[in-house]
Length: 182
Image (cartoon, rainbow, N blue to C red; front, top):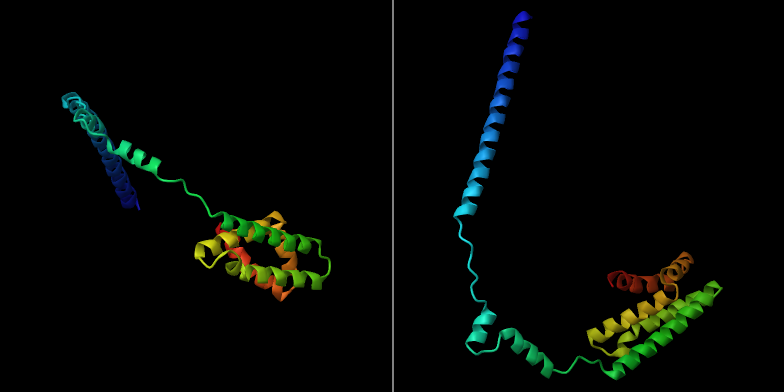
């Protein structure tokens, strides 16, 4: 037993000496790095400013590229939407709000089911109302979902879903992905 105690003491002493040596090497390397950084800062000359592309082109009598692109933007007309498309979206919003406000006021399960069916039909017919282009359909769907959100949105859908109505489930399947993607 005495052998193991003396052996452990020797190992502990060796580890302690090794730790002290590593600490000394670390301090020496850190001081070396600090001195090396100081020398590189002293040796490195200050960078002299080179003429920029803009200054160079002005000196040669040319317009900078950025100025040319700004001048080109002035000649383009501003983006405007078709007034007919805006009108169709406004009509869609009006009809959607009408259905959802009636759904808010509905008290019977049958009445809610009928209104959910109307909402599903309106949603499915968005392409016929606003245009067949995907951009028009997407805008129409967003208008539809925004109108739903104006009328209490998710709470209204939850109430319809709790009634176990298949029309409500169909409406939720169509509307929820759009609401959470925008």
